[in-house]
Amino acid sequence: MSAKLKVQPVTPVALPPLVAMAEHLRAALPGFGDLEPLPGRAETSDLAADLAHLARHDADGFLIASRDNDVLGFTVSFVRSRQLVISHLWLVPELADTAVAHALVRKAVAFGARSGVNDLAGHAVAGPEAQAVYFRHGLRPRFPVYRLTLPAEQARRIGSHLSSLLPGHELTDEEVSRRAGTGEAERLDRLVRGIGRSLDHDYWLGSRHLRLALVREGQRVTGYAYGGAGQCGPVAATTSEAALAALGWALRLAADGGAPTVSLYVPAPFENGLETLLDAGAKCLAQTLWMSQTPPSGMERYVLAGPTLC
Image (cartoon, rainbow, N blue to C red; front, side, top):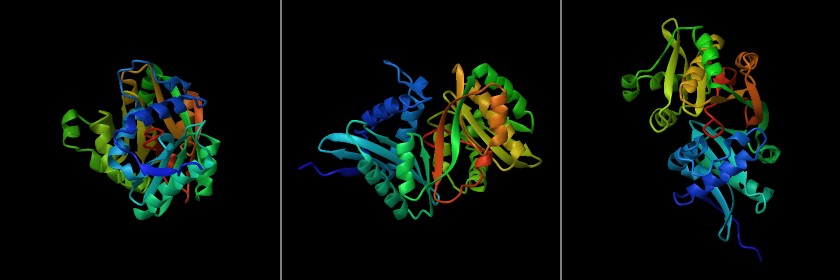
């Protein structure tokens, strides 16, 4: 008789092997091979940093499935305002099956219900199997998310052009230390996505040391952009022109981060941003899928922070 399947929240001891597992599974997906972890790597990957952030603040939604002493897979979910986002579903290919996947997502959805959410969303990175599981739990396909890359110098050039469309500025170190711009960014989150995520802004500015720029139309801030080493986004804006200008700032800030290439995750509804990037020579390496219970708003003026903290 096989041992009982257990689904439990992550613990600090369990996190490092889960990160290693997710990094290797992600690198095996089409269009993600360039993210294969290198032996002896000193720097922390985007995936490792984001998972550590969510394990610290959203441990009840970071769930591990195991049988005996074998880890079969895990899912990562987090609540922002009244929405539960499931951003990862990873299964060990030779050990897990769809029953494990359903058990993980079922537990994540129950976590959302206890937290009082009124909507579910999922970023299906791991392919059709994850999409099918999300579908069975009430999420519906909404649009693709494209992983685009371009050389840093090219990103800097197109970024300088786009950021000049509207007035804007990068926050100074003194403004960042006072969190002077995060109030505007949080206001834009609520207007564009209908969620609040102050702890994520603290993480991007503090732990990740990303840079933040704000875009103005008249006297009002209508867009924000993050960028830095290894990350281009998030970008959020209330108008189409502000979205393009903010995208330009994100590209500039990411290009100045020191990496030879810039990668970003652009939802299909952000059509003018996608067209501009592709016309400038960006390569589309991968396509993931955004799913949700109810049709999302604002994604035509949005760039994801990444595949995890989307």
